[in-house]
Each structure stands twice: as C-alpha cells, then as structure tokens.
Length: 180
Image (cartoon, rainbow, N blue to C red; front, side, top):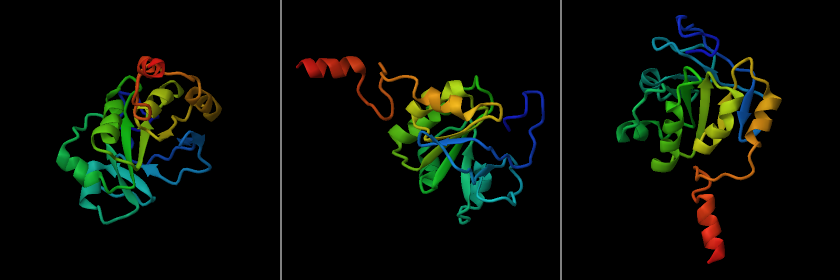
C-alpha cells in the first residue's frame, strides 16, 4: 500500500515515486524507480517495482523488478526466480509490520542475494538502522521523513551487541576472542 494511504483507504493504483532515497548509507542524488501496487497493469513509468505475479509474467522486461508483499513466503522456487533481479523491493504496509525485516535477512543470509534490497511503503527514520542491519541497502523514506534525520539515524550507534547481516559475531564473542 502506498505510504500516503491509511489502513482504511483503498490503495491508489498510480505508481508511487519517493523523493528521498537512502542508498548504501547516503542520500541518493535521484531515485529513478517508482513503485506500482497495481497487480493488473504494467506502469508506464520505468524503471518500476511491480507486484510479484506481474513481474513473473514480464521477467524479460529489464526495467521491472519484483515488489514483495510483507506476507511473502520465501520458497526455494521463488528465490530462484527472483535471484537474477537487479533489485527487490519489500513493502512495509505499516511501520508496525516487521515481516519485511525477516524477508530481507533471509534473502541475504540464507539465500545469498547480493543485489539491492529496497524498503518501500511506510518507512520511517526510526527503522533505518534496523533495516540496514537486516540487509536492506536502500530505503525509500515516507514523504514526511526528513533525509538529514535519516542519515543521522543510520549512524546513531557505533557499537552493536547482536550480530547482523554484516557483522556475524556478537560483541561478547569478539571480546572473548580478543582475550584468547
């Protein structure tokens, strides 16, 4: 669902283009990609993230990439299908829906996906550090989120106790190994 829709609204079928994109830890100069939630028709604007079934039916179009819903089940067949995509978008229909974190982490750690994983939808500054730790390398901010706040949020923590997709060893394990 587009980031400007609420739970009671019917999602707009017009492609959504977000002005503020954080990519690889920096504010991107531009965001060429739009997000289309229309499962029936391809958007005119390209490049575009489109719903999974529509992407699967049009995989030969190199200006399309899959948009995974937050309730997507990553099967081996699905991952094999999307593994060649240059980018994958994962929808956050509400900031309280954390299933997208698990999808990104599975794509990175279990399935070894190395392309762009982009968070789209209801993406808030408060989520960015956790998204990055789960494997997202691009986050399309909701319109009311300020990009300078987003960049500060990404660098708010210098030490992490738990492992993540980049740092596989917990802090206590590092300390134990350093003492050995």
